Image 1 (cartoon, rainbow, N blue to C red):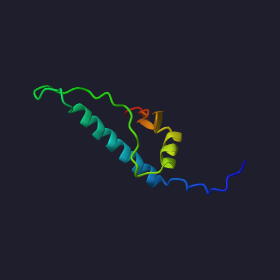
Image 2: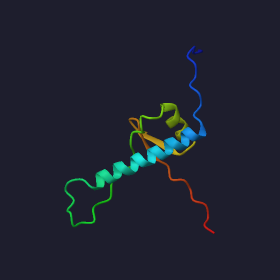
Image 3: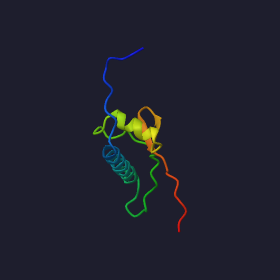
Length: 93
């Protein structure tokens, strides 16, 4: 079974780096928005956000998110939502 449709070009390292940066920024802003929601008193210290995954920014094509998932930087959780994968930290010197 062959497909006549051309394959999209592989994402460049710069494109992948930009996508990760955009994903982290969107995740951070989504969490901050969730933490500052109604119901938290103005004198309280707020609450921890329960948001772990988001829909990736539309600025990048699906092939970029698929490649980041293949590389182990993102994990697809459900219905087009992704979460960041915690990268193991090396030993501190």
